[in-house]
Picture 1 (cartoon, rainbow, N blue to C red):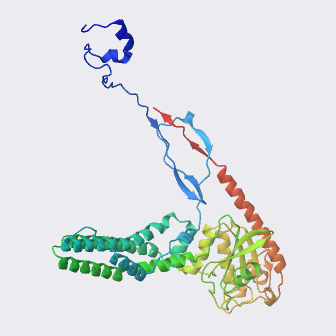
Picture 2 (cartoon, helix red, strand yellow; picture 1 turned 90 degrees about the horizontal axis):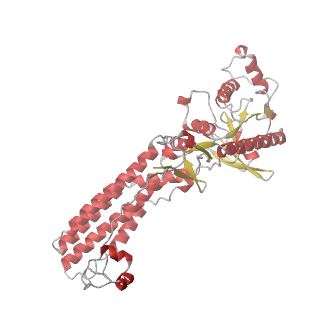
Picture 3 (cartoon, rainbow, N blue to C red; picture 1 turned 45 degrees about the vertical axis):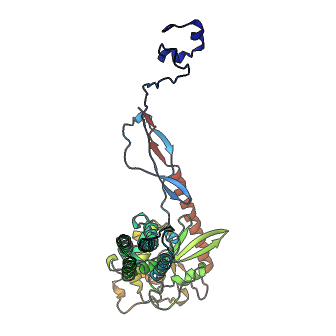
Length: 457
């Protein structure tokens, strides 16, 4: 019956086995059929990748300036994608930095608790195992927080321009990056020395040698951390300084008070908002950006008190003056410009006029309100400094000496003259600013960008 098939066998045999079965009925009927290799068809699909950033707890796609490859114009489809927004508030997310002494003490304490691996009977092996593990633990306890600081402190290039200016003007140009670089250098040295001495300890031949190398490695790491740990303390000071900076909400209308030093900006901030700036009779009382808030008609607004500006070129200005310019340059603020024509502030009216004209020309796109302070002290005769010559005044400057800029509101904090009208004008200014912010955010969301379809090959 070799190589012969009966009708009964053909009926009982699966069709697939007929193709690969040999004509030998002595083998079992349930023999495994060989594997079949079939050609496969592959489809390649071009993917469109998108990068995202986190803004206010949401993922916002980041625009890519690179043009897609092999995209037909006819396949382009307009899709509404919200434009990425630059936010502020990075300083409040900075990690808490421990003093270098506390980091070292905690690391030494935890490393000494590390014991040798259980089950090692030989004394020398057990001691070198314990020494190597303790040095490794000490290295990690020091390196981990340093690495965390380096990773969690933001790169200055990724910050909002306003916060970037605060870092440069408060800490000095390049100091922030230099401290972070020194912290990372300290981490690398600790890791390098720790690994080196742990390896030496693991190669010890006797118990005494292992103990000596353990002490040597521990002292070396302590010496490095004590000598270079000042960078950690400087980083802790930087974190405290930046964390104390006022937080500005870009979606909330902000009123920025600007003017020469000692013209009464801080007094008006106290009167208009919850801010409590220091008030003294000397220039540059305000030594930073101070923030207050106004609640009007169940709406919250922000008020900033800025350092005074003097008559000089930008390259000659101090960091306090540059802070004021940074606020005007990088924040969507309405400006309340304060003038003092009484001569008490120390800056002559003619100098104030020149400063005012320069600032108004540079930042005239902001909403603007002019206020003449200390109105109760103004007299009919304009104040004239000894260094000034009234005969050389232009008609515009002469008018400025008497009443200030056109449309300026005269107020007095002492007698409350014009304060009610000032509050009304400020409220109107902030409501206008709020509508501008809302209109701007709506336009950004409705902006159309072209996204190519997915291409299949």
